[in-house]
Length: 179
Image (cartoon, rainbow, N blue to C red; front, top):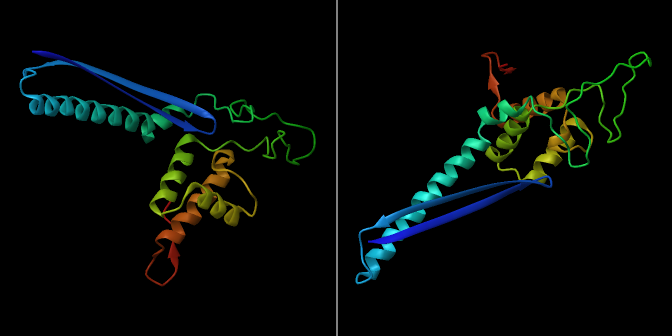
């Protein structure tokens, strides 16, 4: 009997933040050193199993339900501005406030679900992240990153991308938007 220990790790980085994942499997194989091909095949099986388990953990982390559960948690942008605190009312009779990075302080930041949906929608349409941001700029008429959108802006971009991807008609030739 030989003892096998397989370790895998992966680091995902986005916007200067990273999340690490690691996995170690240990077990015994019933093949001796006298059959090296069979031993190598059994070790490959351990690696395949470990790879699949690690991929499932990452998918679970990135899945929509996991992202939705993190919506309530504080999100901090790469420029250090927190967007979890509610905007304060001012006495400027409705004029928009700025929070120092050009985004209106009274606009609720897009949810993680909206951001993830936008990224997935871009992937389905074959857009690279920079192409997606160019499309966002074309839709909103301002340069803004996916992670800096407000809820309303994200909704507008999602609607526009969905309409351009597969417009449905309501029977009389007009486009229909399902909400």
